[in-house]
Structure formats: C-alpha cells, structure tokens
Image (cartoon, rainbow, N blue to C red; front, side):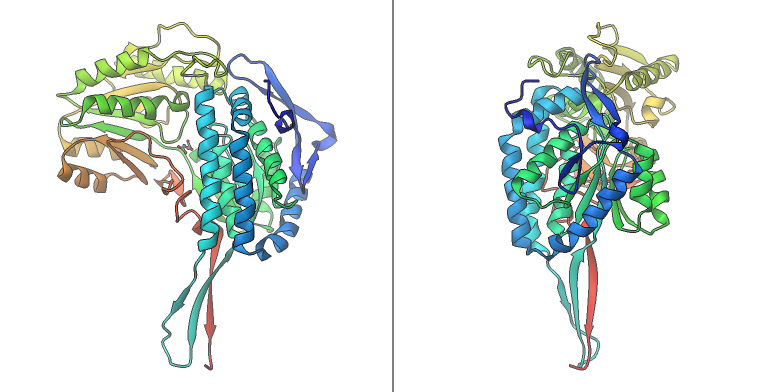
Length: 483
Ligand code: SIN
C-alpha cells in the first residue's frame, strides 16, 4: 500500500490505550473489493473485549468530563491537525479496504476531519439557560452535561467520516466512546485511533472493537454503563438496535436508510441537473444513504435529461480505486453486486428499459456498470428499495402534485433533491417534501456546518452543525429556592 507512515496500519483492537489482540488471538480477513485480495488479518473481538472497552470508557469519562471545554477543544484540534497531515496515507488505507477511488477517499478524509475541527470549536459553546421563575424566591437554571459513555456503530461506506462525525461531538461534549466499525473496514477506524493517541487524547476516551458483530452489539446495547447509542446503517438493523436499547432506556441517534427522490421540473437548468445527478447518484458507486435513488423527471424535459445523463454516465471509468484514472470503484462485496443486479432484473421484467450500462465489461466480481433505466414505475423494487449501487431509475411526471406524491411515497425520509428556477415552486415543494435534507439545484448537500439526518424510518437525531452536540448532552434543570 506504500504508506509514508506504516505505523498507521493497525490491525488490533484499541482498548484503554492499548492495542489488543482478539479472543484467543483469533483474526478475520479484510479484503480489497476491487480484486478480492486480503489487505489485513484483523483481531476478532467478542463479548469480553467489549466489556473491557466499556469499563475503560466509564473510568476515563470521570477525568475527561472534568476537563474544561477549552482543554478538550485543544486535544480535538491536535487530532484534526494530525488527520490532515496523514490525509494521503488514510486515503490509501480507506481505498484498499473499501474500494472507492482515491480522489473520493481523500475527499472523505477531509470531510471527516472537518467534523473534528467543527466540534473542537463547538465544544466551547455548550450554553445553558436562566429561566424567569414563577415565584419571587426561586431561581431556575438549565445546565448541559455529557450523556456519558457512548457506543458508536458505523458502516463501511464512509469508514472514516461516519466515525469522525460521531466521536468528535461525543468528545467535545465530555462523553467517552466505544466504537464498533464495520467488519469490512476497520483499518480506517484504527488509524484514526492511532492519531487520536498521538494527539494526546487520554487512554480509555476512545476505544474500538471489531469482530463478532452480534456479541459486540448485544453488549453495547445491554450494558447499563453505556448511556447512548449512535448508529449509522440500515433501517432494519437500526430497528433491531433500538429494540435492544429499550431494555436500559438508552438514548439513540439513528442515521438509517434513504430512498432519495431527485425531481427535475420543466423549468430546470438541465445541464445543472445532470451535474447534480452525477454527483449525487454515482458518488461511492451509489453506496451512500443520500444517493439519488429515483429520478422523477417532467415529461417535457425527460428525453433531454436521459440523453445527457446517459452521455455523462458513459464517461465513468470503472476499476480499482487505487488507479488514479478510475472514477467509479467496486461495490463492497459480491452479494451487494448480486442484489443490485436483481433490482435491475426485476425492473426490466416489469417493463423498464436499460438505456445504458449493463452491456459494459466489468473489471471484477464486485462491479456493477453505471446504468440508466427508463419507463420505471412505482411498482418496481428500484422505486421502493434503497438501491445502494450505480443504477439511475427514471420515472416521468406531468404535474407538481404528482411529483410530490411520488417523491413522498416511501417510508424513508433522509435526503431529496429537486431542480427548478421558480422561486414560488421552490418554497412550495421544499415545504411539501417529507425529508430531513432538501437539495435545491444542488446534488452535494453534506458538510459539517449543516444538520444531517432524516425523518420517518430514516432515523432520528442530527449530526454536524450547531444541533449535532445536542445528541450528546443531557439537559439538567436546577431549581434554587429560598432566595
Ligand atoms: C451516508 O451515506 O450515511 C453518509 C453520506 C454523507 O455523509 O454524505
């Protein structure tokens, strides 16, 4: 992998400031989805390591929460600076285990680091309140305190950024964390832990275990010492974790699946819409929760949009993300590719046409060619399910009401997009769409200053922005009498 700092390549769990082998020295392989080669043998942890990690986080929280916000901010800033200096190595590790093109991996490292910087600054702005009391002898005050030990369970699609945007606000608020990165991509997580240690973040404040997902998940959700779970992943797993957390009434933040509509109105700038569609649909080979999932295009601009999107899609080059000329990498594993192909088959069997894509030759078993489907209907699985692959299904509409009805016809509510130049329509449509994030004439909506999160079955809570700290803080009311 040719790292300039090989010590960033860690394969063991990180518990109480020590790199630790798994139960009985067991390991599991992490593979490069572009070619199936083994990248590393990683420590396979289970229940006992998770118990140890929780206990370390509990101990460390006593000291960590007692630091001033300024001291915590200083350590987060030092971590941010080290992540920035290691960007290239971190990107190479990320591409090797996840598959995305290096340029995107570099972007992800910068994106993850932006949350660390943001929350280092926000740490100093955890304000309380004074409330005018109902009687003259009382004074009412609200203070905010850290939730406690937080479990962070993160996915493989953004192995760096999803973790950074949970750990940074947790630490800023005075919480400590036990992290369970996805088994497919633990190396990016461990490298972040190594840099946190170098930044001077005390032992036990950040802990990471990877391995037996079920056992680790059970311990994290049942331990009374863990006061909160922050999860990014599928809606199905999110629901299960919420049920498991109910027993100890843990707070939860859930960033779950999406089914983003992308509406192109008749007054849209079609070239801009195609640009936005390319970014939104094909980033990370279509494997983001906010990827455009259904294109809903006005009858009068449908053919032009399809033709231009098809031409732009034809320019995408598939291959190993470590090859700088590649613009679209593999899916995470063969099962993911099989699932996306099954969605295409379902659509074509129900009358959809493949305009471009599926006839291209593939560089490996985990690849799916970027594809466009037309004549799609709301009966098809591509309309109803999160595709998580480089497939763009296109439906037609003829009135604003119809577009909004189609867009909202899903239990998901994370991101949505639309293109229009009519100011009145922009307000009406923005207010009618049942989603947590609305991209208006814009396909790239994620950044650290904005609240990221969904409604309906896409989850609860917000990450990033001034709202992102609230998820890690308890509100405590002090009532002073006899004044
Ligand atoms: C996700 O896919 O869960 C996150 C995508 C983003 O942060 O833009």
